[in-house]
Image (cartoon, rainbow, N blue to C red):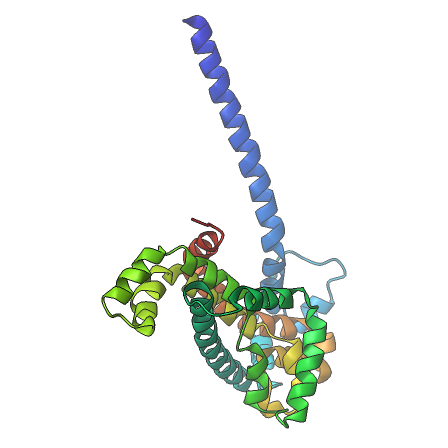
Length: 288
């Protein structure tokens, strides 16, 4: 009996030590991950003078100010760029969702000649470096005369092979017998898609929408290439414009204020839907 109690105490002690070490490491890693966000927010509240007088960076500010946020929105048309980014994000996400839903349904449920070959070719596109795709898209959009237009910004982003694959894998987890039973009852493919498949795969659909919104909001390289007209600038262009206007090269707090203002919507979006994102990704990685 004593030996059993001793072994039990040792097991409990070992479990406590493992948990302590695990949570300590996770906490340390969390601090490392969150520190850049803390430094970004802290810098955005430092005045220009106090920031430049710090030969050794300080982890706090004694006199926080909102002047940097005022500079970020007055020195460049950041508010207008927010509206442009919102338009770009909403339209791009909506069009992409239509494309990938129908493509995933076709590859998962419909039978047609060469389906596997076509899907394999689709997957092979993921092997092409993104730089080559950007060059091809740039030449195509330029030849079509769509530079400095929302159409030129949106068109290259209305589909995604990865999202088609992710949604197709989810659709295939729905028993095929359910589809056959629906067809026997006279249900059309469209009705089956919108009434059965999409509701069942809702976590993955929501995940795709959120990830696409984040992708569009953070888009930088393509908007910089395809637009040189401020009427079509996105928030990413606004950050660069702050630097190019001159004051951003020295007034780092103003740049950090702009970055904070741009990041807040995405952070809030992730915090609200992070459980759905995790559920959708885990569901997409499960077969059977």
